[in-house]
Length: 105
Image (cartoon, rainbow, N blue to C red; front, side):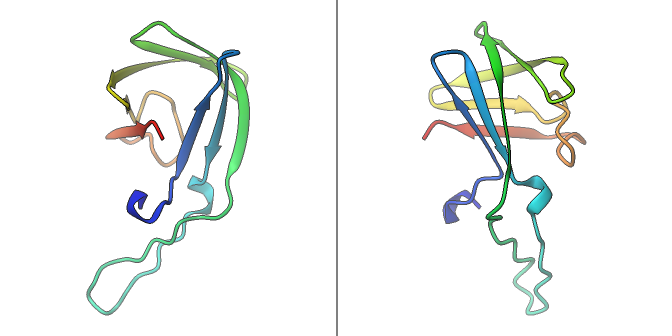
């Protein structure tokens, strides 16, 4: 989806230690393609936006979620890429396992 300039979760970190998250998970549509080329997943146009504060110590990203509860997420940063275990931030539909990969743009 990134090849089509479509991003499901976008995080914008600001110097004042605020973070803006845009999450399009609730707006994903999967169209089954009966032509044999697999499903078609158009990039969602809508997203839910939240602003909160964060702290980062080099290994752990801490932020306050919408509940509001403090969330600590182990991250790995290599160059312009931040990798997060998908179960850590408790994002609906992404918490079964796998990795979330964020690239600096």
